[in-house]
Image (cartoon, rainbow, N blue to C red; front, top):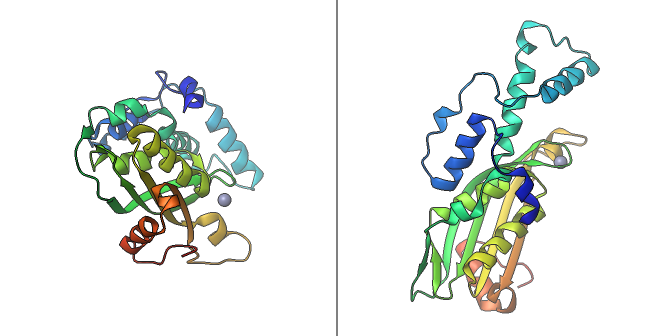
Length: 229
Ligand code: ZN
């Protein structure tokens, strides 16, 4: 996580700061992501987008495209706001000591991310489970954790691993299981089209890795057989 440190902090456009704060604190006023010139803009994204438009044979000055560089600048900051989320603020006071030791499963968490190879979206559902060892995290925080890692340039395998590692690190549970199912637009739109192809990735740690029964219980919650079982 330390590699994110230099990117955090101020100097962020206001609309991105609000989004980061929303992920951290669940205030949830997304309609604040409003138009207006992107703060802190040095114009480099705008210049680059204009060059792409020219390079593909478009006219960046035609009416429909005139505001596109600015929109894209704004959009990329929003879609990568996860770099700026402070995990300590996100977790904040949401870890509780309890006697509960059964599996906790949060299914069907929708997410949207960008593949780092093409900057095209991949999106789908995340399923997260853990077996607590005295500590649990507020349920509403788990989708926030997913969001923090989704709003970055990603590959699905790494995102899956990062969610699992993060919960393992912060909760010290007996084990963690994470499954991501996603459609990649770079696969669907490019080359030989395979619409509807869903890629599934899984990361299992601790008890979920060691214990076949735990792993089978997790995958049963998701309505599918455990891989390798
Ligand atoms: Zn891709």
